[in-house]
Image (cartoon, rainbow, N blue to C red; front, top):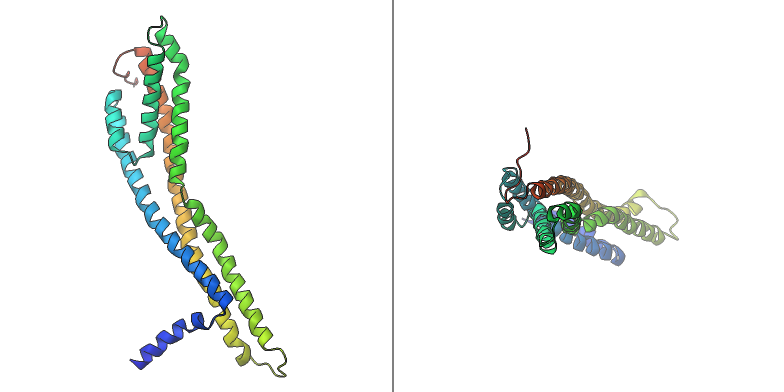
Length: 242
């Protein structure tokens, strides 16, 4: 038991022996680490739900059902960014239909206004992309800044150790080693905080990029669907030719 207590004390000893400046840096790094892991857990869950519901929505969409069926599925899959695009497109489409109702060349006017539907979906996609990328910048900043904060604490600790040796006639490795080892603890903490932040940041960016590409393809496909729906003029979109 005493040996275990001594080992525990030895592990925390560098943290306790660090100067006030180094302890402040380690506190900032610890706080950043807590926020990073909260962001990582939340983002992991949200992106997993978004991907799962996106696949479910696409499976239904590719069956080429009625527009009303697409709306019902989109409202059930609200975690998917594609649902916002689909609902925004349907809302703009119905607004255009209402605006041109009673016009003699109703189909021609709708065909000219189809780009409005694409622009509405682009705006919805921009909002969804901002939601998906939320707090990713914090991970990027932490991954970039944490090592430099740790290095700053180390440099300050080494400088403090050397200043304490001024006036001594003989300086040996035994004199400077404890101070330098204590100073290096901030660099260790900085790297421990930065490495997970960098790994998960790049992982999440890749997943958001995949969803963004899916959103672009979905927007193009949906605009084509509205265009076919306008040309056919029925409640059921035209099936694509083989």
